[in-house]
Amino acid sequence: MKRGLTGHYLPISTTGEKATAFVPHPLPPEPTLAIDGELGALLDAASTALGRLDGVSLLLPDPGLFLYSYVRKEAVLSSQIEGTQSSLSDLLSHELENTPAGLEEDAAEVSCYVDAMQHGLALLKNGQPLSLRMIRDIHRILLSHGKGSGKMPGEFRTSQNWIGGSRPGTARFVPPPPEMVMDAMGALELFLHDQPVKTRPLLKAALAHVQFETIHPFLDGNGRLGRLLITFILCAEGVLDSPMLYLSLYLKKNRNEYYRLLQDIRLSGDWEEWFFFFLTGVLETSRAATQTARDLLQLFARDATILQAEASSVIRLHQYMQRRPITSVPRASHSLGVSTPTATKAIATLEKRGIIHEITGQNYRKLYAYRSYLDILHADTLESSSPTDH
Image (tube, rainbow, N blue to C red; front, side, top):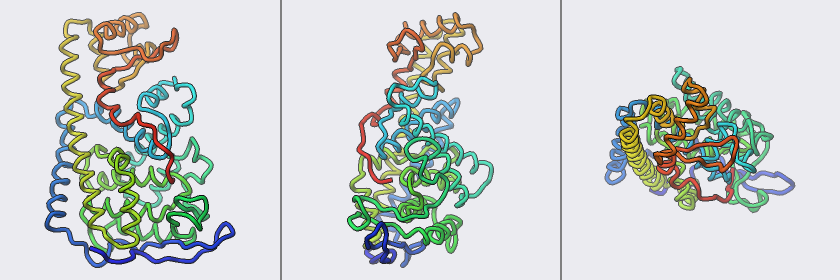
């Protein structure tokens, strides 16, 4: 439904020229959204798929088997959208303090995304509500290293930013002026707390994501934090017990449509078209993640059968690499509590069985990867991405 502008334009003067900033109306949209017919059926289907995804943890002997690497896959994808070139293997190698040459900054930036995600989820599990204070705290961690570390981590912007174009006058979109950011974010916080009305969690996540991206409250990191916000809302609402839903791959594949819809909402108020796009992403992503978990379970079971007659150290190493699919002899020795020769022998056995492979080609500081595991998770994370707005 076309409702017209979802905010108002405000003339501003910045960087020596005049421009027009967009200030969004508080949520929820008016008139009331029409969630019925085909859109209502899609909402029900997406909610069901999300429930199945959350329940997939019941299939796993340890949810950490899936979450450790899946969270990192999301971090890589979300950062690739912003222009980093780090892959999932690069990130895992970085966490073993063996960062690939030339990728230190990118890998550190992706690692900050993982830290920010885990910090926010820990706060939610401890009963803290999703708030502006929490959002700023998460942003501080997100930008603690890398290219955005000098752009006011943890603080709302105090200067004008814009999206697309070299200056505000030619920009594709100009967010609210800095003096209006706090009021706009305060209204968003009230909406997250069901004021003035309670909103279904998936619709709340869809609405809040657009509003956050429209306000663009930080100098950098808005895209990454806006994508994280979706998962945080669903966890805070109790829809997800574990952070199993990440839409970065879907948004990456459909980025042109995504950016078009964000702008179209501002101009025409067609929230229903955005809901179709968003809920389709939730449905597809939930189903794909559920299948990924099942594929991993099948892989683990197959390889466990291959290794059933091997020494206990070999079996324990295989179990460990289900949680950490890249390792080294020192890390395996420490984690398993065995001697270096025992860890070396266990790694050699897994390598001989074709389960792991050495990936550095070095004589020293060798790393070994659970290749089939990474192949399942690596899909769609290696494509290089051109930088977009932040």
